[in-house]
Length: 145
Image 1 (cartoon, helix red, strand yellow):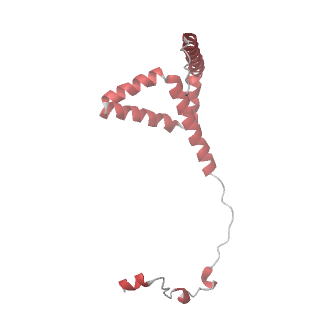
Image 2 (image 1 turned 180 degrees about the vertical axis):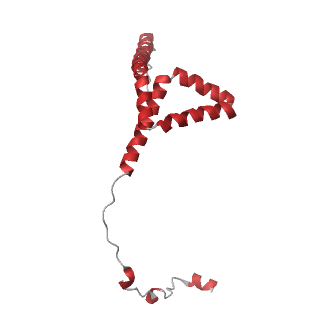
Image 3 (image 1 turned 120 degrees about the vertical axis):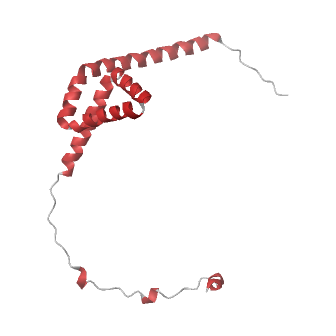
């Protein structure tokens, strides 16, 4: 017969796991809080750079908030509250958006290379009559003729 042995439940391991989870969550909180403080200091710089690089990003964000307040008032109020609370992250996101728009506009202003048009009237015309012959695969196709 097979004998099964069950390990006893050790309460100290569960407490250790809970303490470890609490420590990890606390460390993540400290990291996010320090990033928030750093972005809070840099927020005016982010907004100024966003306005310099592409002011339309700020205008579009304002229009989106206005339209939310106008047509979906509850969602607009929530958006305003989250924008005020997350102002450092919003300003960083607006700067990133303006920077990416600026980079794409710069790349689109590349100079064109010189090219020469080729007249294809002299090209040899292919005769495809031999390929138009019907190839009989099986008797099933004959049913539809």
